[in-house]
Length: 136
Image (cartoon, rainbow, N blue to C red; front, top):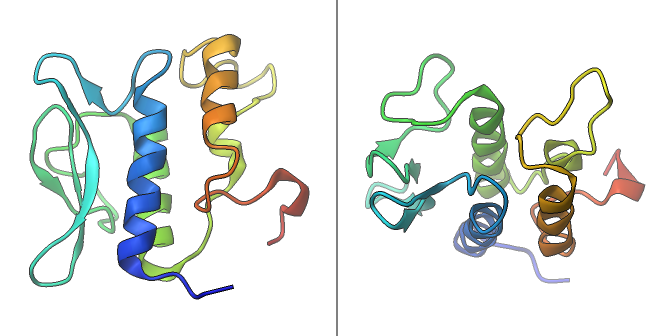
């Protein structure tokens, strides 16, 4: 299997974001501006997340508050994990996409049907570890 590059991983992460934006509450999509969030590599070679609502670059490696990020903590963690995937090739945990235990509820507020559609859309995504290989 060929070794993936940052540019191929950024395309894979952007495809995953596009899938998330197509279902349920359409996270990462701004109807007001008709745009979907995405990752990019700057001229200086840094990975940045371009927010769908603010349209501004966000440093996904920053530990504290993210300037210009219009989503909450659950999606912040997903974006940070995707940025690490782009940078290092570390696949993200499938738990980002449920199913969650009853004590956590429906973290995204997508509902079971929409979340199942997201999971079906990302089932073959190279960004996400397979559920049967949690340690991979």
